[in-house]
Length: 298
Image 1 (cartoon, rainbow, N blue to C red):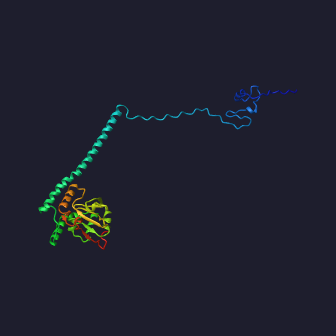
Image 2 (spheres, helix red, strand yellow):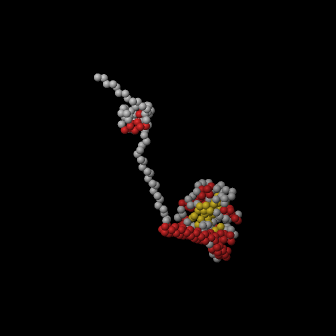
Image 3 (cartoon, rainbow, N blue to C red):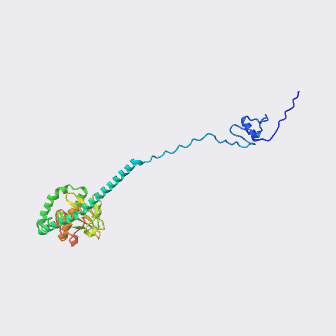
């Protein structure tokens, strides 16, 4: 018995078919869905087109809110903290100002005191009643003065640090006596500045100015000789080395000012730790020496 084939109705694809295909893949007519309308769970293809991914429906987590900064200084507590900071700042400013003023007054107040002291020493010196020792003029006086210098400064000389000890050795190597060294005679070394160049490299040498050669340039220096005095050194305008020992550093406002007053009132005599010396370049009486051939000033 032959069964006549069923006739399948063909019709264009419609949006209604899309929903049916997603539910079971069969059109509303009961027949299979046409090829152009076959769907999978996630993608569909029309007439051989490449499948396209469906957008994800999973909700994204919301970004975490940024932590809020805690405000400082609010309220009564912040007000009093601000007052405290203001008071602290003002106190520091006042303290710094007072400290600076004290240093200023302490430094410049030394000048009038030094002037008065220098005037007194100059008066005693000119009257022969006291003051620094005079420069010896005879061999006997020189020998006696050298013994006095050794008695007064011998212990301090033996304990000098390396830098001033080296400088004292160089001075003595020039043929100078302790009288000229410790009485502060102004010495010019005809060496083209080699001695000054070497000394300024020694630890402890500090830049300073003076009334000699206009205070520089070239730069002048000072070396402390503990228990004795200081040595001023540098270069002359024509480039040679010079030095002289002084009783007090220019940092010692009172005593250095007194020494300067005595220096001027004694006819520009230099004031050394052991006494005065007439050998001053201001009077054209400085001592000129040649450097030792052995190279004492290294």
